[in-house]
Amino acid sequence: MRNFISDFNKLIKLRLTMTVVFSASICFLMGSRFQGDINWFNWMILTIGGFLVTGAANGFNEIIEKDLDKLMRRTMDRPIPSGKMTTGQALVLSLVMGITGTLMLVRLNFPTGVLAVLSIFLYAFVYTPMKRKSPIAVFIGAFPGAFPPLIGYFAAFNEPEISWIPIILFLIQFVWQFPHFWAIAWVLDEDYQRAGFRLLPTTKQDKTSAFITLLTTIILVPVSLMPTVYLMPPNGQAFGGNIYLVIALLAGVYFTWKAVLLYKNRDVPSAKNLMYTSFFYLPLLQLALLFDFIAK
Image 1 (cartoon, rainbow, N blue to C red):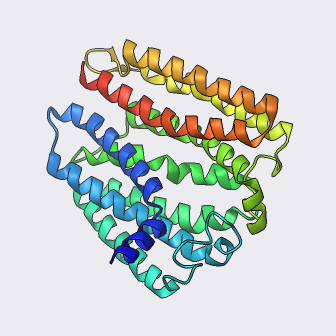
Image 2: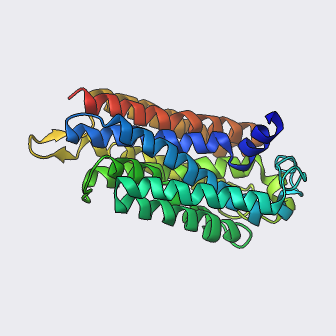
C-alpha cells in the first residue's frame, strides 16, 4: 500500500496538484465574501473535486509522455517509465479521477464543471504535445494553469456571473506563469533537451530568453496591482486594500530583482533563485488579497 501511495503521488504530481487546489480554495473564499458566509460543504466539494481533476490532467500528461519521461533524470522514476505502474492502470485511475472530479464540480454549478473539463483538455491534449514543437506551449499551458482562480471563484456562487474580480484573479496567475515556467525550463534545460522539449522563449539559455523572462516579471507588477484600482459595487471600495498594495509592490520588486540577476548572470543558480521566488510569490499575493478582501 505504501508503494502504491508513493506511485500515485508521483502520477498526479502531488505538490503541483496541491498548489492548484490551494489557489482555487483561496479564490472560493473570496467569492464567498459576496455570499455573506462560507459554505464549507461546497468548499470541501471544490477541494476534493479540484484535486481529482488536477490529478487526472497530470495523469494523462504522464501517460502521453511516458516514453519521454524515461529520457530525463527527474522523471525516469515516475511510476509508468519505471515500470511500477502500467499505462492501463494509470489510464483507469486518471479516467476515474477526471470523471468523478468533474461530476463533483458540476454539482456546484455548470460553468465550474465546464472549466474543469476544459482545463484537462488544454493541459493534457494541447499543451503536452506542443511542448516538443514550439515555445508557444508555455502560452497555451498558461490558460489551464490560470483556470483554478476562475474555478474557485465561480464555485462559490449558485449562478456565477462574469465580473472583473475573477478576471483579475485569472490575469495575475496567467502572467505569473511565464517567469515561473521559464525559470524552471532554464534550470531543467539539459534534461528537457533530452526529451526534445522546447520551452525557453528562444529554446536556448541565452540573453534573449533571460530578457523576455525579465520582461514578464515587470509586466506582472502592474497586473498584480489591478485589485487596488478596481472599485467594487455598490460601495466603491477597492478590491485590494493598502495591506495588499504594500505586499504586492514589495513582492513584485523582489521577484523582478531575481529576474534581473538571471538576465545579468544567465546561469542555473540565478534561475533557481527565480524559480524558488516564484513558488512563494503567488500564494503570498493570494493570501494577502484574501486577508485584505475579507477584512473589509
